[in-house]
Length: 231
Image (tube, rainbow, N blue to C red; front, top):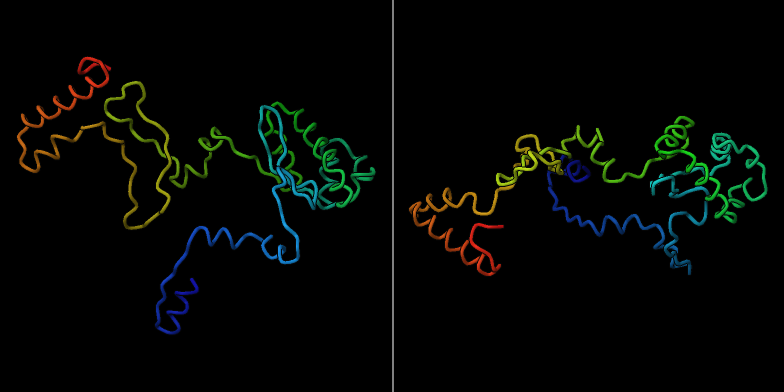
């Protein structure tokens, strides 16, 4: 957008060189800290300087991301969990104390989450209190996501012709949405499905295509130690 604005003002276009690695690196806020001798390391599911701030486990190995480091939000979470005494309890009553007491803070939250058969129920209650939270998707959640479906990122594709056990399969859609040439996801062809169409286009008789296909099949199954045409 900046380059387009510059062109609009000056009439001079620009070549944009943009790399994924460069973009990701630009978000690494720990880089400059190294100049001060502070080297960040992997810390697992939870931030080490604020709490609670991280990933918490519910039942059935399902997880949520939760942020409640500020006292105002922490107070709402404690009341929601039925633990209002933690608002003023030692080790829980300030951001610094919760960081020092991180293991117990995590245990309190995860113990509460595991009282729900489905962690999504807890997420709804937390969201209703305006506490920052998000369900961490599993693959089934992704399949059911209405936003992805509305964006055309989940599409049903017809199964390849030889497959008779399933008519269609959900697949990822086209990620770049173009107004004039939007593209379309089509079923994958079977091996050799278009041999006749392609080879006859270049003048090969159908009988010769058949002979070549049979020759290939015989050689393939011979290597497999089986009779041609059997799977």
